[in-house]
Each structure stands twice: as structure tokens, then as C-alpha cells.
Image (cartoon, rainbow, N blue to C red; front, side, top):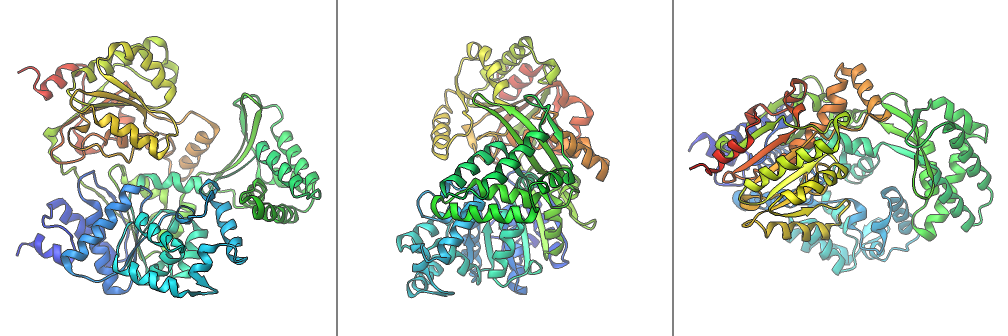
Amino acid sequence: MTENQSNEDKYLFPYDKLRPVQNELILEVAKAISERKNVVVHAPTGLGKTAATLGPALKYALDNKKKVFFLTSRHTQHIIAIETLKDIKKKHDVDFIAVDMIGKKWMCTVPHTDKMMSNEFYEYCKKQREDNLCEMFTNTKKGTKLTTESKLALEGLRKENPCHIERFTDLCGNDDLCAYELASELAKEATVIVADYYYIYNPRIRDAFLNRLQLSLKDCIVITDEGHNLPDRIRNLMTTQLSNYMIKRGVNEAKNIKDHRILPTLVAIQDVLNELSNGLNDGDEKTVEKAEFIEMIEKIGDYDEIIADIDLAAQEVKQKEKQSSLGGISSFLEEWQSADKGYAKIISQTKTRRESVVALKHHCLDPSISSGITISECHSTIIMSGTLTPTSMYKDILGFPDNTIQKRYPSPFPEKNRLSMIVPETTTKFSMRNPKQYNRIAEICSEITNLVDGNSAVFFPSYYLRDEVYRQFSSLSRKTTFLEVSEMSKEEKSVFLEKFKSYKKTGAVLMGVMAGSFGEGVDLPGDLLKCVVIVGLPLQRPSLETKELIKYYDDKFNKGWDYGYVGPAFSKCLQSAGRCIRSEEDRGIIVFLDERYSWQNYYKHFPADWEIKTTKLYKDRISEFLGLNR
């Protein structure tokens, strides 16, 4: 028996073939968990991260009575994790329970609840349960105990374990039972819980969920997949805002419930926003001191009493309407009182066709305020992604301790199958944007995609830039062009993608944006995508928010430019570029079209194993790679 074969059994690896790099990752994860350490892993697509981390984590959890949380926000990755666990069960004949969970709101089958904001849904759900108004819940539990129907359903769910959340929800819905309640009940006896980030990184959801499971973080091994997304997810979670639009809606809600007592308070809060925004024009913004806003509100009345009064009115609104802007106002006032460090407090004004929107934002800059505490309390945390580079940046930003293990693994795919180039012929730098520049980008993109004998994708920093380039590209390209539309629904995205795939023989060009529907989380293996062109860098506009983020990371790590500006943009570039090579057999061309990619302060962010070359002879290089000169 070889060492690899021995590790397949020892660490519950689910498949027959264990690659050398995969074996190295398994041993690193197993060692870290046994020593209660953490790991930050840059592991490119195709390495088999899910199997290499779930196996050793599950083995340790079974032997030491721990729970494994496998966290991912991608629907496809939920499926892969559950299928991996099924394969582990089948190959090793090991008995364990695994539960797949998404947000409580998305597991609810009550009509229209999916339209609510998350915090509104949780409050609505709580009230419905307390008043015995939810039929699904009353069918599932009587008081704190499960009904007979629930117990029978659980027996069936145990037999079909593990199963994907959609299947689980359908089975519960068929019996008019609450999927979340039954999944939570099953989670008590589960060794593995596949879930969204928020089950661990949202303090409110995490504390309630772990309390229900009678579990503490020290009993949890947390594997975070697609970890490059985690900093922004936590920032968004911990950011709140107050706008004149919210107040206007709040006034209407107060009138509808005939609560005239809080109307003067809401009008006075609007006056505070007006005063703070005085002198701002369209697009302007400025910082606001925490104490300044509180002092202005205290002129209206006691700060805490104002919060309580608005919150009480919000509860009444939610009983009738399920959602309430008043609830958002009270939540903002409460959050504003939290610590200043790691937050930017900014007021802005933006003009729309109908009105000017004034928004005061309590913006989280530092995700480690939340994640650092979580990481320090967990038994072990493994965070991984194909674009977690540099690993030191994510270690710092998320608040991992100094003894955290950082690993960077090379791509398992043959280097000869990928042509990676920087073409320093154009730029999307703001000061250089003009019709001549757009035309040159269109020429190069059309020349590249016309050479490729299959589908290509061209990703831009914004829809505006894409549309400016498309005006010229449309007449130069010999192929059908698919234009991504912003905010596509799941169904629209699926139809769009299937139609694009159908052109794999004749070739088509998908033109989208790096932060859009197809720049991440979409697999186009084999001959479905032959080339990706990344046009420009998706750098954040130099807003006050961005400047505050750069300043914050300058003060904290002396790396504001990299951590607050270039690093996050590069992660989006690499994610979009990764759509091309998805398996060992794939051959593809990746082009980075912007002169700035060749500058050292940007170039250093490319993974070392990419062996990327800078050239202006892109047509020759592509022809050689495709064998067109033979």
C-alpha cells in the first residue's frame, strides 16, 4: 500500500485517485486541526479542495466529538460538498449525519417572504411563531417539542442523508413542515453542516444557532470556501445606512398605523440629515463625527427612547406588512452608537430622476472586528480559494493569529494548456479614457476573439466601459455577441448561459463585467470556453469610502494601497480569468488587456505559477498556441 493509498483511508478521501498536491493539502489540514491551528490556502481550480479538506476535518470531528462547518455562498458548491460527503459514506462505510442549510428566509415556503430584507424576515418569523400564526411551524412543533409528523419526517430524512437543501426543503414542504426547524433539529446530531457564511460570521445568527445546538465555537472546525469573498461579505453585513428615502417611507408607515406620536421625531431626524448634508451637491460626500450626529438627535429627545419608540411602531407595521422602513431606522440609530474604530461614517448626496437621495452610512472597513473573534474561538479555521493571493493579505484583513499556516499550491493543470498574456496596448485608467482608447480596445478584442475557434468571454470593469467598447466591437467581430444584463434573475442567467454554450462549435463572444453574473461562480469546462480577455482593472472609484479604507489599512498595516485598493480589484480579475481552465483537459487563452498589469505594483499580485508573459505580439502568440501557423 502506498502512502497516498494509506492517507485515502486514514483521512476519509472519497475517490480512488489522490494527486500528490492533494495529498500535501490533506496532511497540512489534518496537522493543523490536530494542533488547533488555522490555515489560509491558495489552491487553484481543479486541485480538489473540497475533498481534501472535508475528509480530514470529518475524521477528526468523528474521533473527537467536534462539528465541521463547511461554509460557502455558492449554490453549486453546496451541491459539490453534499456529493463529496455521500462519496465518503459510500467508500469508507462510515456513519455520520450531514445537514445542508441556507438562509432561513430561503428555506421558508410562506408566500412573499423572499421579498423581505433579512432582518425584517427574522422579526416577522419570530412574531408569527410566537402568535402561532405560521401553519408550517405549528405542524412541526408544539411548544418546544416536535410533533409526531415531524418525528416521522425526520426518520425519512435520516435515511436520505445527506441530501441537498432543495431536496430537503421539498420533502418538508410536501408534508407542510418547516424545513428550517427540521434541518436545525437534524443539525444537533450532525457531524457536518454545509451552510452559508452567515451561520458562523454573523454574530446574531451564529449565537442563536449554536445556542440551539448547545454548541460553542471551540467545538467547531470551520472550512470557508471561496474565502476571497469573505471580507466584503462581512463588511456588507456590518454596514448600515439611513436615508431620506427610508424616513419618507417610515413617515407613511407611521401614518398608516395612525401613530402620530413618532411623526414629529421622524421629521426632526430628516431635518438632521438635511443639516448634515447642507452644501453637498450631486455626487458629493463627507465624513460625519459619531458624537456630532448623536448630539443633534439628542436635541430631539433621549437617544435610547427614540430608538425604542420607532422600534415599537416598526413591530406594529410588520404585523400587517411583513416589512418596515421604521425597523431599518431604529437599527441604524442603534448601530451608530457602536465603536468608531474600523468604521467610516459618511454622508452623501446623489440625484436621481425623481429626487435627491441623502444617505448617512455607518460603513464597516474592518471585517476582522467580527471574523477575528470567531477565528480565535473556533477549534480551527481553514479558509481557501483559487484566488486567495497573497495569503498574507487575507490573513491580516480577516484577523488570523500570527501562527496561522499559509499555503500556496500550484495549479494541477499542465502549464502547456494555458497561454497567459499581458497585452500593454491600452488602458482603462480614468484619466486616459476617450473614444480613441475604446476603439483600440475593441480592435484588439475582436482580433483575439476572431482568431479563437470557439467561445470567448470579455470582461470589463463596468457596463459603461463595456458598452463604449461594444459600439466599435460589434462591427469588427465576426461572431455572435452576447451582452450580459445587470441584475439578471437566476432563470435569465441560466437561459443566457445555455444559449451561449450552444455556440461552442461556431464560436460566440460573451461581453460582461467582472463583478457581474458570469465573472465568478460559473463553470464552462471543456470546449465551452476557449478564451477570456480581462479588459482593464476593476478598481473602486476614488470615493471617500475607498480613501478611508486605504487610510485605515495604512494606519493598521502600512499597506493601504494593496489591502484597500489593488488587492480586492485583482481578486475580481483572477476570478474572471479562472472561468477558462476548469479541468486537466481544458486548453485556453487568458489575456489581461491593460498596460498597468505590467507595472510591478500590479504584476506582483499574479500567482507565481501562472508564468504570465508581457507581449504586444498577441496575434502571433495566439496563432502559435492554436497551431494556426502549421
